[in-house]
Length: 153
Ligand SMILES: [Cu+2]
Image (cartoon, rainbow, N blue to C red; front, side, top):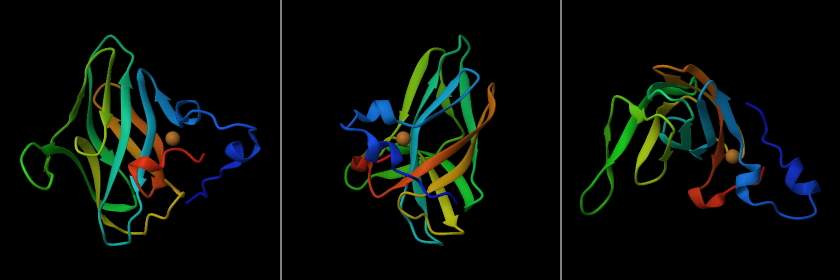
């Protein structure tokens, strides 16, 4: 685990909009923007959210996610209904040509199940996204307390 440093924010004389500081990972036609996971204790589950963009002219699909920190990883989608949000596991996230898909609370998420270690605030979590066309994309999710937290890095 690497400590997540806030060096940029400390030395800049003004606060940049979060989009400027957003961390992203690019592999072929796929861009992964600001992946983040929620703080969680060992043994628990934690959702991971991010924005995916396919700049290519062919559709792609996110078909699997790997994280050594979790016993199991699922891709899930919120079910529409009244009351508390419930999620169902889906096989893939479709990412059309020239399309962006936001994975965010109340919509699509990746769920890390049976965490082998705690997810500590402001640390980063290495993960691999597996796309049908683009292949394996290595990313680092930042660990936040909530969606509203935004960037401190
Ligand atoms: Cu970020």
